[in-house]
Amino acid sequence: MADMTFSIWRLVVENNEAGLMYKLANRDTFDKLITTTEPIRIHPSDKEAFSVSIKNTDDYIFWMIEHGNTQPRDETVYDAETKRTRKNPRTTKELEFMEQFFALYDYNRELFFISTLRKGGTFKTILKQLDDDLAVDIRGMYVSEEEFISKLKTLSEVRFTTTNDMFSIDSESKYSLEKLIGGKPENDVKLSVEYKQEPIQRFKSFLKKLRKERENFQIKGLLIRGTDSDGFERVLNQDEFIKKIKLKDIDKEENGKFSLEYILKKILSEIERLSDDLVK
Image 1 (cartoon, rainbow, N blue to C red):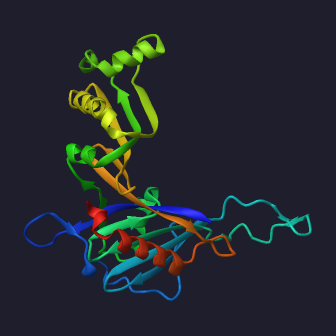
Image 2 (cartoon, rainbow, N blue to C red):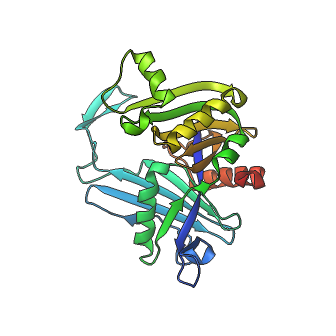
Image 3 (cartoon, rainbow, N blue to C red):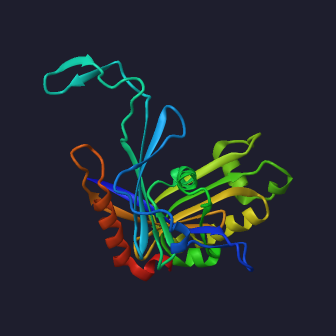
């Protein structure tokens, strides 16, 4: 069994009507993306390929994106049953769609869920290839830092970088770091502190001090990670609020991959269970 984490975002498109430059995606945004009975093959290069399966309904659109590469490929394969090696039957031009990620856009809640955030750029490129008129952007859900801190119950990580310039002379964090490492560093220093779910109340003054130093350009790249009372992981990074939900104990098929319908059922069930808590 495995776990799969979806981060929650907004999906926006350019607004061609008078008013705001961007608007949230809706059913009309993806009206050309119909449910597919067979994967759609997209080949950005000769060595890499993507297989896209889509389910588009009145309530949501769901994507399963599988991809693979002709490399790496070994010259031989090992048979675990016979304990013998033989020549790899897969040619140098062939690949397997063994890597997967999933995405879902809830039309009613106007929320976008993606299982692998680092594939966000790839996801947007694939949408563009499926529909040349489709240009979407993935945006964070913005909240004030005070609101973010007020919702945290426990603290799990704080990360920031000291700035080695004239603005950082009075930085208490930098002074403490110099005492810790026994001298003044010549360059910026990145500091990451991990906690084991410490109660947030004990660290609120510390976090307030860090936010003040960032405003004064004494530190940069401030990241705060914690958990709220509902068990959601919350991340604040440059004023961007990222919320996540986790699918636990999910099964793979015999081929080592997840099925579209199985993951879809799991994510819809979790969204329905959490309901309005998703945007709190």
